[in-house]
Length: 402
Image 1 (cartoon, rainbow, N blue to C red):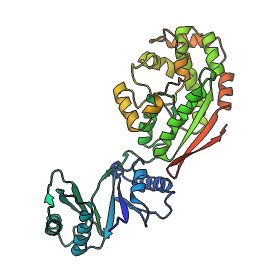
Image 2: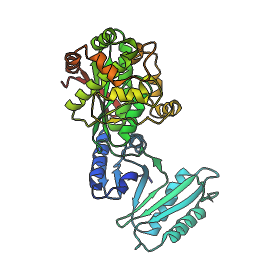
Image 3: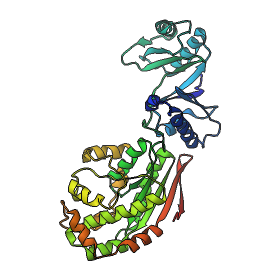
Image 4: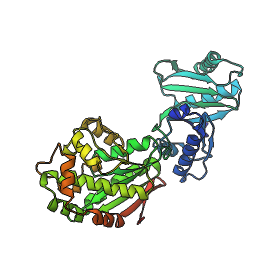
């Protein structure tokens, strides 16, 4: 007997109140978009559960897509059955027989959402368990750590039978928390910050600063490759590449060396904020971790943040490098991030950057130069790349949104 659907569990969405329908509807649309490569599937969204009806499509391929969709706590390939104990026995025997290997153990996990069903939970467990033991030679019970967990969910409209729980990405559906701009370098930190922000329901767009000829096309491609990885979670990812050479050269000409890093971050933040306004986003995300480098001391953050009132989100602020590396491996950006192609932040690092810059001093140093026309020019010449997930591949479109 083949699975005919995938049962999706909401997790955190289940805690929502009056606006729960909004979250469920958004998740349904996200799943539908992600499964466009499987035209036969259809989706049933209910308050407690969601079902992907397979209609002959490959359950394993669809499962690979569902694993990366935020808002899904877990899911199970399942069969919808009539509310008849004999039908349940036959289906359970069919599935467990197909999964059984010599020495396998099992348990029955019945859940009776409909209390009007003829058998209670214990009676269901005993009826199905006894039937399996009688008909599969060598099968043994293990209620703590079974090889096969037969899950039976009794609901008003039908009974659902499954034998596997697959972990989803968790979090909230994309876009339910608004939009934010991610300051995306080629390093380890910012992609992880973007991923964790997406997990909280944010639609994330990347902003990368590119300074040719000091940074190479390979460094630019590195960031595009990272963006492709992020696109797999929400179905698409928009990357804005900012030409930064002229501004960066001027900073190093006009600002004292130990304050160039502070000035660079301030200008980057101002440009990102301008792009945020045009993209109608509400916040800026960074990959900063407190004390990790000179620009990430509390004093530096205070001096840099002075240029905007826009909320700055720092998902990694209390994490250490080891934790960030583990996250990067988990989301498959680690090997890209460690490619030896430097971005403008690392190429232009001063020999002795100020770790405790004074806001008043950097304001004074910047007052001798009018950066505003250069900021406007940089925003005007932004290159925008839209990466889309289609048929489990990434298609790239290049555009200019400004």
